[in-house]
Length: 195
Image (cartoon, rainbow, N blue to C red; front, side, top):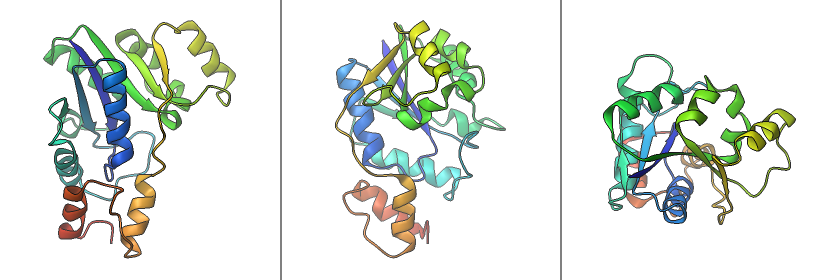
């Protein structure tokens, strides 16, 4: 079984996340993509929506795709959400032949600053949603060269939206239609998130 992991704050989840996950799933013939909302992100600001709200939004967004599954393992763990710990947990709970970590280009740029990046690459290959490696640091370029058989660059049609932009639009009373699934939009409005 080939599994993809897409972790993040998902504050909120949007079509960019979903499109990247689906495109990677098809291209790499992944059997499942696990969406893993984090509790306390180590490399980003504290989410505005609660852990429960973010988890529920991801559930709503992924409901229609049988190849997507939402795992609350980072939300249930105390402390900062580190991917290396999540991969260890997944390895003890699930049986899979291949594991792929799905990362946006911005997250991959900082990958060597993550907790135990070499342990992560030992356990999982990386799929980077990217259009090239021109602007990476020399250390990251060397890392890519050393692990070229485990790092894949997925040139996919970019969906130009960010969670930050969505939050700002909600705060300003602007539409987020076509940026997030309708069920997520309804949930945000009903719960007064990001106002």
